[in-house]
Image (cartoon, rainbow, N blue to C red; front, top):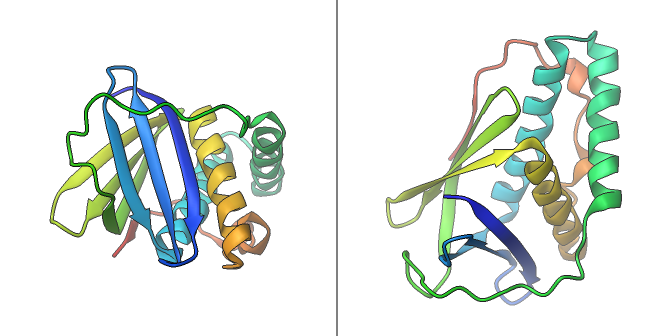
Length: 170
């Protein structure tokens, strides 16, 4: 599945993020993301990015490059484009609650496996630039929600071991 566009909004009544994306083939998907899932996505992407860079650089340089990539994505993100509706909704029209996630990285692509409340899973295969834009969007939404789980609140990546296994969150 090739993602064309994604969108998100914090819904105060639900205290959740409504995350939607559509594909180049006209399919649309909608999910509810809780504070814990948003935190897992933000921190997981930072850890995976750090470990990817730490394979070629010292830990200090890898941490600086991770922060630079995040800042660059924040500056390049376009949040003014109108989200296009989808022609089809393979998982239904209503958003589905995400209850867990697994993130793995291979080279410049990250796989985000969303585990859904109805026992289904959906795997998103995101190139690094798209992942960084997604994380920028989620960081902006968590700021609106005042959740305190964003990029600035994340712990130092230098405290992590360089051989950390894939992130699992349930």
